[in-house]
Amino acid sequence: MGRTPKPRRLTDDTHELATSAPTDEQLRQVQEWILQGQSEHAIRDSIATEFPGTDPLQLVTGVMDHFLRVATIDHRALVTTYGWCLEATKETYRRILETGEYAGALRAIKQIKELADQASALHVPDGPPQDDPD
Image (tube, rainbow, N blue to C red; front, side):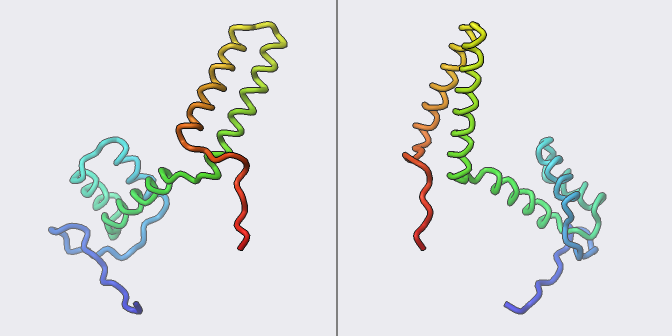
């Protein structure tokens, strides 16, 4: 546990050692390259050129970890977002109904039904989340 890992090489054909930890700016840039659909080879070359001394694997792993965090569903946040959308749509429906614009009111009703269908598909529990008694 107390051992410090040896720095990794940037690429197989480079002798420069990776010694610095990636910055947020570097991670954002690598994320942009990935989202642009750049090839692994092109990303490795760009990292070696733009960020010498930084481990490409560490940068790509950092971006993948970010993608994983973004994709992980926080059930409480999901329920809260659903509740906000439902209340906002109900308020919009009320205001549209006051103006007599019934086509807009029907769209709001359709949106509320779609929200209910989506919540049902996600198995949103009944009632507010309960705190653990621990």
